[in-house]
Every structure is written in C-alpha cells, then in structure tokens.
Image (cartoon, rainbow, N blue to C red; front, side, top):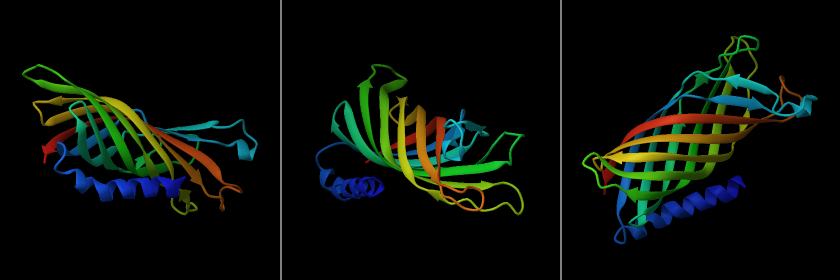
Length: 205
C-alpha cells in the first residue's frame, strides 16, 4: 500500500504543471498547534485486548505547505506535506515518550464562496497519504525505537479570510508500526491521532 501511495503522489506531482493554464493555482504555508494528540499502542500481540495503552501528548507545533489546483470554482485538488515537531507524552506511569510525524498527502477541498467583507469562503478538507513517524523514549540509555511508515488520513474544515488568510481545524490519524527489538518481541501497531488548529497564508499563483 505504501508503494501505491508513493506512486500516486509522484504521478500527481509530475502532471500538476500541465494544468497550469487550465485553472487557478495556489500555495498555502501553514503553522499548526496540536490541541488533542494521542498515541494508541495495540498490545494485543503481547497478550492485551488491543489498542489498550494510550499516551496523551503535549501540544506539538507543526509546519505545512500545500499546492492546490482548482478543477472548478468550488473544488480544488492538491498535494501537501506536514512536519510535526516532536512532542513528549504526559504519562507519569511509563517511560516518557517523544513522537513526531512527517506526512505527505494528496488533498481534496470542496469550497463554498461567502459574500462577506471579511470571510471569502468556507471549505472542507480531505487528505490521504503516507505517514513517516519518529519515536524514542525520552530517557538516557533507553533502547532505540524503529518505526515503519503507514497510512495517513486527515479531514476537517477551514475558512479563508480576505482571500489570503486561512484558518483550519483538522483531525488526522497516522497508522504506524513499531518494529520488534529489545523492547518488544513482535511488531506492534501504533496509531497517532491529532486535532490541529492551522493558521496560514494563501499565495495565489
């Protein structure tokens, strides 16, 4: 599945310039703040009931960039990348964990124009792509953690202010795998969920 996603994203990136003369294009630069981020560990392989352990994470900052092409007045498609800075777990009953992700995704944005002096539009957000995770125990001498990349999904809602300022609320999920090692005798599925408030600027091309 990861290879298929990579091929789709690469193909979209290669053909995007061909649409330059056929529709509106824009680039978004975004700064995000995670307000409800959690890591769920599936410990069923260790004898647990499945997705049994939850780490509540501190509020991470993320940086993002997107390219959008307007298929029509109220529908755009695009490509994006989001880099989430590492965030520490709040848990006191387990070794502190640091987690971060880099997500590369294709996006769709249905949009409704608004006749207002301030708000230009309101839109929905749909994203699918590849999540690449980073994780380690924030303790000196702790064993390293190797993570396999996996499926990234995101959805949300946003608004454009004065045709250039964007504000969004996005819920996302990165489905990753902790590889077996000195800490775990088998591979373990991990789900990193995030609720993020994005503020950014839209550059028309």
